[in-house]
Amino acid sequence: MEAKIVLLPGDGIGPEVMAEGQRILVRVGEKFGHRFQFQTCPMGGCAIDSHGTPLPDETLDACRASDAILLAAVGGPKWDDPNAKTRPEVGLLKLRKELGLFANLRPIKPHEVLLDASPLKRHIVEGVDILFFRELTGDVYFGESGKKPHPSGEEAWNVMIYNTGEIERVVRLAAQAARGRKNKVTSVDKANVLEVSRLWRRTAARIMADEFPDVKYDVVLVDAMAMHLIARPRDFDVIVTANLFGDILTDEGSMLPGSLGLLPSASLGSSGPGLYEPIHGSAPDIAGKGLANPLATILAAAMLLRYSLKLETEAKAVEAAVESVLEQGFRTKDIAAGGPSISTGEMGAKVLAALA
Ligand code: NAD
Image (cartoon, rainbow, N blue to C red; front, side, top):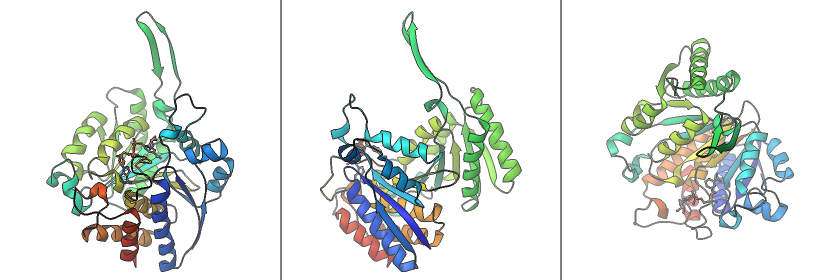
């Protein structure tokens, strides 16, 4: 196949981990006979420096015209001034909005050989394989907000709001993904208290019954889910939830594997390119030292192959290569637990070799 892939290396360790992600995609193209065309564009702090804005029009146009986008990380102390005209993260929010990326996917699958790096006991994390779908464009983050004086000082509010269509589309994506996995969807809400959650629950139940009768379905309250996620995470397959609950639960879930440098994510819309990225930030403390773990970016590239290019075999090959490198004992410093470690480039080279 032919595909146009936009690369957004961003700031800090971004360019270092992106170089390894791109090398893997190039090798996948050669090995499986695909023609991937790459275009690297500025975004984040580096784009503020070069263009005065974190998301230049040319970058947005290139993203719109692409089949998929791989982003490394944006931000850093240089652009942290709260009084600055704009910030690197503004570019990321705008990109998601402009591309209609309403679902954030986060796989939580601890690697067998790193189970002891988890803060939880091995018997709890062993065999965990969860795919989170967090709604990304609604909820309290986008409802009406304001503040006004109050006899005790001030009063402030953010409206939690969803409409039927916003709930339907993310539940549909989650259920479709479940069919290729263990065929189970868990919807998380707070329907015992919140009107908006009662709409969420009714809508999700209807979509599942009408369109996905073959997929197992259950609902869990968000407070209970916070407990189940660390007590019995193995019981879940696909979890779908609203923006605020998902924000908190996915961060809780990201602790299960025990390392930030290993977790990818994807943001998808109904059509058009998806955006793939590691969940970690730009790690300015280790930038330029060859210490960054490129595996999250490489695994984000695998998600890109799976969800945007529909290349499941190729995605699995990349994931298997990462697994094999970890099984062979190779570690970057963040996952070496004080033992011997290799550099960002060496880790990328090991994955390339395993892929061959
Ligand atoms: P961070 O994820 O950048 O770093 C947290 C810690 O994890 C640091 O000690 C870092 O060295 C380590 N770490 C992160 N990724 C690593 C990797 N691949 N390999 C090895 N170690 C790694 O979070 P932070 O320090 O809170 O934020 C730094 C900057 O990144 C801030 O400007 C923040 O706004 C930005 N940020 C961007 C994104 C994004 O681009 N999506 C996400 C989170 C934070």
